[in-house]
Image (cartoon, rainbow, N blue to C red; front, side, top):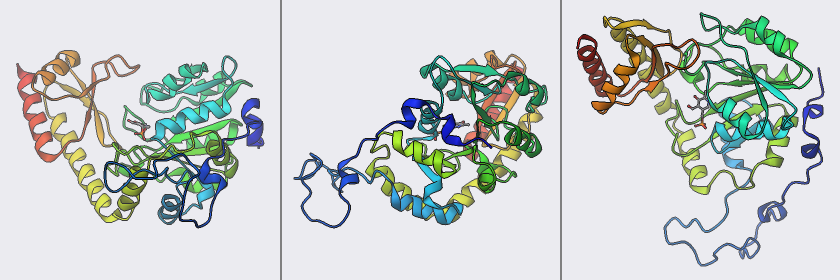
Length: 350
Ligand SMILES: Cc1ncc(COP(=O)(O)O)c(C=O)c1O
């Protein structure tokens, strides 16, 4: 197996990271005049005049209990989107390296590649939305640094075969990033347990979905120490704000409540799939392991516009490869789902 640090960009390998005031002093003191903060306070209480912990120690300690991984294997980002961007910045040389994605999939792998001037190679999912291993093999070359795997996949909703993912992990020497944003809604086990076996594996998770905290922005990357170490070295020093750190800590002590929400959403997703599937205008409701459904429906674009007029916003995915006439619909509250169904059944017959 390749030494992961050999995959790094040269400039990153040589980087001397910024040392924040909070890095340079750790210990106890009662007068802090080292970070050019406003020492008087802030206009709101609790006061937010001090910079937050750049290493988010308390959150990582709590995550260690929940995920069974020590803090050296945990990176926290301003959403998973920041983790995605940092992986490009650490490992992909602009104008030289490439990554592989599997359309239709989450859009930020591609946007972030363009921002970082990294070539995107596409191995579209098969007709059944499985990974196309032969196509991936064809695309890999010496400059392929990352294979992105979103499982369960957005927008198709399915989780990929574990055997296929392991095949990639066993045969590719670059990074394999498994984005598990929707894992809590799935029957599949996380790949976190596989981290000890694969130094090139990165698992992304987020508090934006099952945990219901999209507004706070907290994404997590789990990986071997060399990968986490480099992500910490290149991140903006205070990437997770104080308010987010406090509220996340509070939320991480509410696992029972979160598990209850997950059960409720999964139950409603399954009911909604059945009910939408009975509508005459619906051609297919794809099996979902996420908190959303991909629905193939006659005249998707027209239906999308009509739903909008009724104040219901879904995502029109018709132009994504393999998703002609498809809408992606997030599971709502019970009332919202009922309203959606009612509106869809009227539109379908109109
Ligand atoms: C697969 C996937 N990954 C990541 C994200 C973004 O997560 P975050 O809110 O943590 O940036 C999304 C959001 O829709 C997603 O669908």
